[in-house]
Image (cartoon, rainbow, N blue to C red; front, side, top):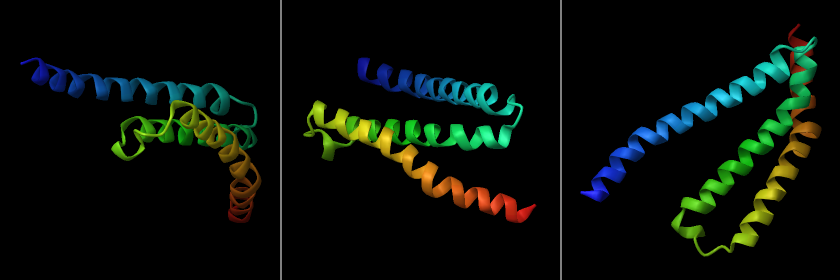
Length: 108
């Protein structure tokens, strides 16, 4: 019965936790971007960081849950997730944001 209880509990806790994370991300965007005096430029500053955090968390969860990555050492997981946390924002800032900015300017 304990195994069934854990499964049912995960059915309740997983959506609640996902909802709390979604609310936190919305509030972060609301405070940092939507309330700014120039939300478009602020979005171009905040978006790379949010991309990096999101990619690093997804990578960490893959390392944590995937049977194929269980053998990866904790230190290597940390290094790889930190590298993603650093490299994704840099990539977004220098390659994705300029293209997005040009697209926005061209559509106005």
